[in-house]
Length: 283
View: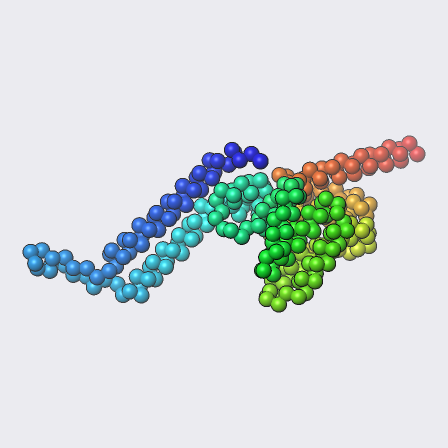
């Protein structure tokens, strides 16, 4: 990975974060100084006296300062989120998170980034860490990432087993809210499509590729689903649909391994179509 091209961006974000924290501290100090009761005396005689603000209002102002700090901090850190949901640049997200993200539990980010970079061994390592988590949702995300690593390394038997684990775990989850559970059910349908592709189940692929829906708005997710739909169409000999899907992957995720894989299939399909045309012209 080329970390050097992100040095300036990392330094700019770090500097802006420090300014946000410093301005927040200054604002709180000023609030305490000017809002607290005060008395000015000259030669033992009070010339100015202020009752200050009620303590409740002081607390409210301080809380507002912290709120503005969180918003400003998020704004200056925006490249952390936009790197995948807008740019679909896993290398950028990975490097920025390693240098700027102080959270401990972001295995899901690393698993995702390494997957889109085509480093399935590293992605699998972080996926397995999530599977060991006591958090039900982390386990589900871990199983999903494990399944797609297994799928892309063509360990299809393992894909079937991991997908079965996922569905079993999801059905037994008691703490996940119904609305959130619907999101994980969408992911489950994607696993079903991977299983159908791995089994060359054309009927299942045709039924599922039109039914699966994105579980979030990330560009990366859009590209991943289009790749699976393209692969399903390719195996079902639907060349027009396959080319359309693989081109959509290239447009959405040009900086990922999915783009390279899509290019391979597009070339294969074009060669096949050219061969068919030449055969027909001869006949």
